[in-house]
Length: 255
Length: 333
Image (cartoon, rainbow over all chains, first blue to last red; front, side):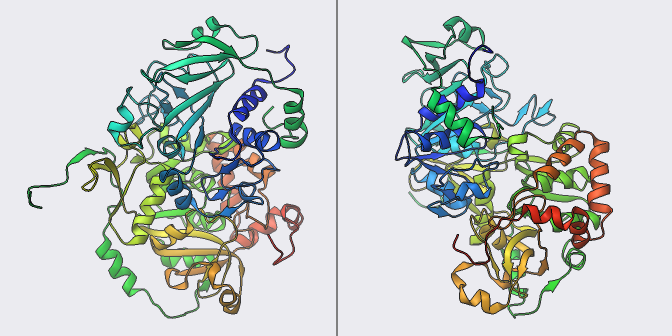
């Protein structure tokens, strides 16, 4: 994608940002979700209320936070409380979207951010759940943002850190997770994916510019459902790129 | 149906170890014995560690690594050479240093990483080599609610997180069917710390503490700690506390020692006061890529300086001044 006037990260940020509605709440984790939330506030969603796990509610994201507890997560915020308040707010059903990352995802949207290999003697130790399990358990609709390849889109994740639809239809409810919650979208450098209403399996919804269906299939380690028709995602606009480069991330931390 | 034959079914038991089993009666008795008198607790970091932290203790730190974290006290703990500590790992930089120093035997783990910079090699070396004994998985909400249960003085809290995942399987939570609604609930055992470490914006010499901005899990952890060590950016007169009692998150009777540590969160940030020292932090991340580098970091930046005041001299007043946020004292936030 070197011939394109934007980077893979910029595309991910723009796609995620467009999924953020105005006048609602979104649980924001470190990295791309922070940039996406800031872009949304600057563009189509001035009244988006970003919620950060260590207590920031409704910050105005003028400067990019480097950490989910840093002072920019409550810059000109509506409230600065603590983690129990935020997590209990999610548990009561007040937080619409949750944005997550992960090292592996499976067809049901289960995410691994704990370990590659056996967790008791990991090949690669990953940072652990942090707030991810809580976001995936308690927010209404979770959106995962990942790089798309066969190492990450796997048949079976090594560890279910964060619940997707678990083993399929009805499994979340049977486990006791709140009703009508679960994975909503997966945003990748190749496409936007969703989940089938009945089978709860991952489904290709729309392709990023220049990407083919075959390319998505080739980079996915399980059988994908295909929407009919499959849509096409618009590339980042000049306005989005200008906001990102000039206002939101002038130091190019995420370019 | 009688109460006797209607036992609450336990649906699942996490296979992780309960590193610090809750004993609420012992906690109450301990709390009863703590002085409720307003006594001067202002001391230096060495004395605070000597008197209140023992080998084998279960300890916790708030908020985390790069944000309002008691890094001055963490370095003092490493200098004091405490061993076989068990920790609650809602941690970043402080956990890195303790793991690099080989002081940790068991972890209640939720997240140890560097956020935008990924997982530190200190953590990876310690966990991938098996150097740490028990590593029990939790989430951030789960650990905070475990503190909250202790703060409430109850042995567990029922919650709707962790359910259905390997995180729960590798935790020490239990799942029951709710006796009122029938839905499965994850029960999180109360976590009572032997010692809690919290860095605050201001405290008086008796231990009354105020924090500006988000409070993380300070409220819960302070109340879940048998012994509580406070470092503060500023030591204020009690009158200043009494003028704004609604701002007091940690009342004096919870606190055992107060240490004056300006820039106590360095190289992390302190909301409204100073920014993260990104330059130093990047240097640390670079050094800790190897075990030798991590040792060299501990030698140069922990052991080679006798205390926090000497560390600030080493960092340099000009370097620190550049991190300060130009906000006049007491200005509207």
